Length: 259
Image 1 (cartoon, rainbow, N blue to C red):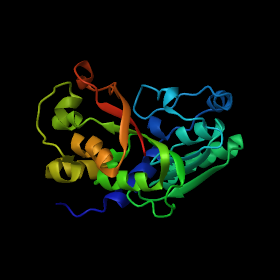
Image 2 (spheres, rainbow, N blue to C red):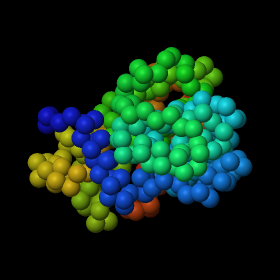
Image 3 (spheres, helix red, strand yellow):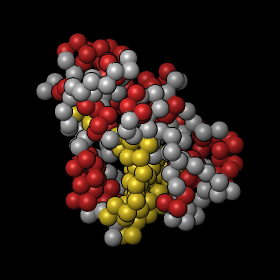
């Protein structure tokens, strides 16, 4: 296995994504979005296109919500504008700055914490009513540790919402998939660190791409159950610019409860 500190590397990769200004996941929401959210009219994403059903949310007024690995000035400010007490936790300080920008612009009270999603020890047991985790565990090596930490900080009866990449996304040759060709190449679980050949890996590092992990369904879904969650709803979503979208969704969103 290549010797690389995944957390440090991906933190800097996402800092660069913010500074580059091209990623949609680093773009803070505008004033109109916040104004609508103050009136209870909002739609936020766990995946790429399909908004989370409003029925998935408990009453937000006064709810304590952890937006986990959710920096970028998007979900956290919207939930705060809707009346929740929001903590945004993210590995990238530049992503957190996007949330600070919206909070200061809109007069929102949002707590910002930098850290590793696999270590939520800064939070006491049963600190939150909701944990909202958009599709970000692809950048984390061990998703089961994350689920255990989420379970610990969530109150009984609390709701955990997460978006994940369906592992089918990672079985194809990425260069050929970019050219519109679906050719099976990789096994699951997948890791950029372990599965990319030397030339491809060096290209990733040169371009500063965040490094990804394709987790198995056993870890993504079974891991939530093993942590103690009851998964009570789900939906799928497609990656718009992927040729796989013609045949199969790339994303899974789940809603789970801590009994």
